[in-house]
Picture 1 (cartoon, chains in turn purple, orange):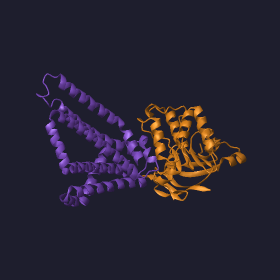
Picture 2: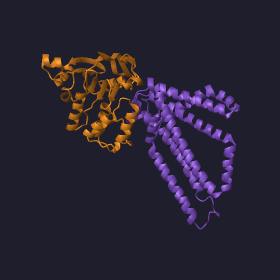
Picture 3: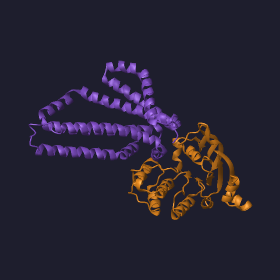
Picture 4: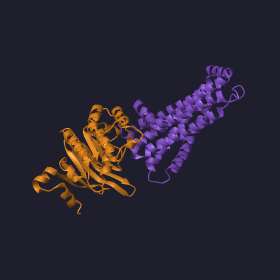
Length: 235
Length: 231
C-alpha cells in the first residue's frame, strides 16, 4: 500500500513544485515589499496578505480540480493503466489514490496555514500567541478541522465512485464529465436517503461519532469502487 | 501439463462480440502464437487472460485459480498500448515494477535495458515508439513467472532490437514456461513459435503445430495464413 501511495504522490509532484514555487515567490515579494515600501509595516501591516489569501484559495481550487481530473484520467486513459496491471486489489488501488489525495491536501493545507500564521504572527505576536493558546486549550477546533478533512475525504470517495461507475457501465457514452456529475448527483441522493437522517441524529450527539460515521460511509464507497474495478471494469 | 484453461469465453460490447465461445487449454513449455487480422480478438483475449477485461460469459482458470488480480502474480503481460505516464522516467517505472511485483528482478531489467540502449533518467514523454516498446518488453522479461504474454512485441522496433527481443524470448523458453505472442510479423515469429492459434471474429478457427506443418506439408506460416483467411 505504501508503495502505491508513494507512486501516486510522485505522479503529482509537478503540481506541487509549481505551487511551492509560487508560494516561495509570494513570500519573497511580501518581505521585499515590507522592507522597501515607503509605508512602513506599522502603517500598513497587512500589505500583500490579501494577495496571499487569494493565491491560497486558488491553490485549493487547483488541487481539487487536479485531484479529480487526475483520477478521471487514471480510469480513462490507456497510458495510465499501469497501476491497474499490478496484482493489487481494486480496493487497495483506490484506497491508495484516495489516501495520496488526502495526504497531499493535508500537506497543502498545513503549509498554507503555517505560512499564513507566520505572517500573521510577524504582524501581531500577541494575537498569534492567543491563537496558539486557543488551539492548546480548546480541542473542539482540532476536532472540527478533522471533521472537515473527513468530510472532504467522503466527497473525494463519492467523486471516485461516480467516475468508476461511469467507466464501468457508461464508458461508451459521450459527454463523460456530464455523466459523472449526473451519477454523482444520483449517488449523493441515494446516500442521503440511506444515511442522512441517521447522520443528523448522530451529529447532534457529538463530533466524534459523526466523524466515525462519515469514515465508515467513505470506506463503503471505496469498497464498492474497488469491487467494481475487480469484477466489472474493463481496461 | 495444462496451466491456463479457457471455456466458452465470450466478450461482448453491446451487439458486437470481441470473443465468441473461445475454448482452449494452454500447456507448459510451449510457445504459442496468436494470429489473426485486426479486430479478430487477439488483444481482448490477452487482456481477459490478464484480468483487465472481464468476460461476458465463460470461464478462465490458471492453475485451477479463477482469473483475477491475484493470478497476475504468475502471469506477465506486455500490452501493445502505451501504459506509461509520460511525466515519469524509465527509472521511476522500474522502481514501480520492483515494488509491486515480487518476481521482478531489477538487476535483470538493468541488464536488458543496457543491451537495448535505453537511458534510465529520460522521461517517457521523450521516448520514441520503439523505445517505449523496448521498455515494455523489458518489464515483461524481467519478471520470473510461468506464463508470459506479448501483444505485438515487434511493432515499431528496429532490426537490432527485434533480434534482441526474439533471442531473449527464445532463451526464456523452458519446460516450465508458457509463452503467448500475438503478431503480424509471421516470417519473423515463425522460428520462435511452436503452436499457432488462428482467430477470426473472436473465434478459434484453426490450431496448428508448426513442427508438424513443416514435416508433413512443408508450408510456411505465411502460406497457411493466406489459406486460413482465404485471401
